[in-house]
Length: 275
Image 1: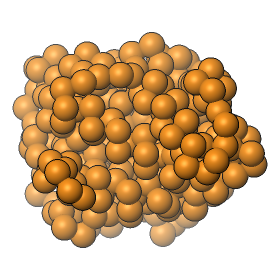
Image 2: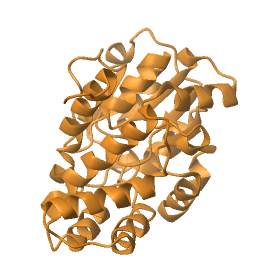
Image 3: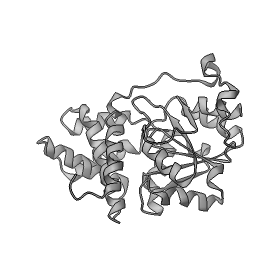
Image 4: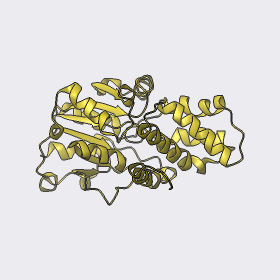
């Protein structure tokens, strides 16, 4: 990776590995509050990690709350039926979001996603105009459904008195539409976008923006995400972290283990209730 910024090279390696598993996702079986298996009832001792119960939870949006399955269909259709190219498109989009951050440029996530799809199409010898690529990305990205555990899990977390906010790489307009279409608007107090600081996660600025706006200390806040790179950024700022093991997602072995590792938000809510 000649002439590549060393930080960029390291982060891109992590993102490429993580994003390569996107295609492995499957639609999970719905986890209803009253039907969580006994094995999911937490052991109080196991949940006592010495960290305080958070006052605020910051929720990642794409893949953590919302399923990317519709994008697999729309991206595949734009690429001549090649749904297997979704991981390549996703990793390319993440790659260039970091390139923009480290080179002090900014285009919103939809614009980067559109450009990334055009790049993937070109490598495959597929002719795709900007408007065709945009139509394949933006409507689907803004209409992603929540994972089956999300609504119940957020209700449980909210009922416990913890403040819930979201932080996403999507644009401000995009996340408002996403949350409305997914039926999550009333469950989240505030919806933050990296667009405000024009730096993509895992850069420290987006996380610090949330802390400053809410007037809370890093140790009082829990970042919840299905991406190891997102949690790396949160750990760097001093936040507590929780990894949601969505299908195909794994932790990065070179980082400290998150404070919580769960299969879904219902399990996380029960762990926090047991502290």
